[in-house]
Image (cartoon, rainbow, N blue to C red):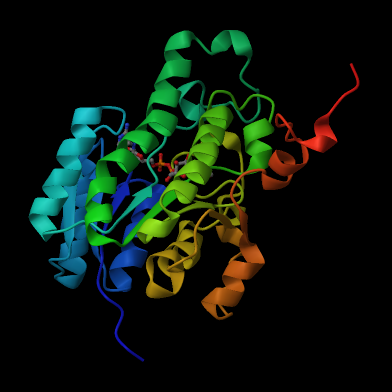
Length: 287
Ligand SMILES: NC(=O)c1ccc[n+]([C@@H]2O[C@H](COP(=O)([O-])OP(=O)(O)OC[C@H]3O[C@@H](n4cnc5c(N)ncnc54)[C@H](O)[C@@H]3O)[C@@H](O)[C@H]2O)c1
């Protein structure tokens, strides 16, 4: 079997709970990884820890707020300078409902509690930040004629859940954006996909106040099944898909595991069945 090319992948929120597992997973596959985080100190400390463990020069820390266009452009440029190229992006950074209230699981957040400042803050990071980072890496991926964009959204039940605003809708915006990007870049060798944990995962985003048995939460490492496969050569041509990491079966060949936990991004059946378009015979109404 031919050796897999080593890619340069940026992981946003790389110093957080899922981010660390994703970074370790990509490094274990032999890729070079940039840990981007708004908490630059945490990104640097994590990179130092990884270097102590494996002596790897393949990991790089970069600070930046994904909600700021200049930070996104500068971070991607810094990664390109450091590694000489950029091949992919994992849009993992995000703000959870904890920014509104730590006990939001027991006592659902109410509309009146979500001030315009909080609404805008969550959308600026989760939705706009994902767009800004995707836009910042795209010229590099287009230059390669090869690229991967993987965004971490959330489960559909969370998007629609009582008390999960503005988090849920901000993730729904990434879901819809990713469907459009997948279609736009499908013939450019660049794939755009989504990976979700599938439910609450054992990370700082799920606070201890939530009261879960931590051992029953999804392990952050679950993310590595679909993400490693999407980044690999086997993931070429796989685009516009959404994978539920908790349902990835590590005992199966990756293509079978992907089939079992994947589906097209978003709500394609609804989009098709409710489409009303000028001139479509089926939509003509009697006047
Ligand atoms: N933990 C879960 O149960 C769960 C479930 C579904 C989806 N997710 C999603 O997974 C992703 C990772 O979440 P996590 O659980 O690891 O959370 P986490 O809080 O442990 O990590 C998030 C990381 O993002 C960084 N970050 C926050 N704002 C940023 C910004 N503006 N710019 C750059 N970095 C920023 C933080 O510093 C942190 O390191 C998020 O997008 C989250 O919405 C998490």
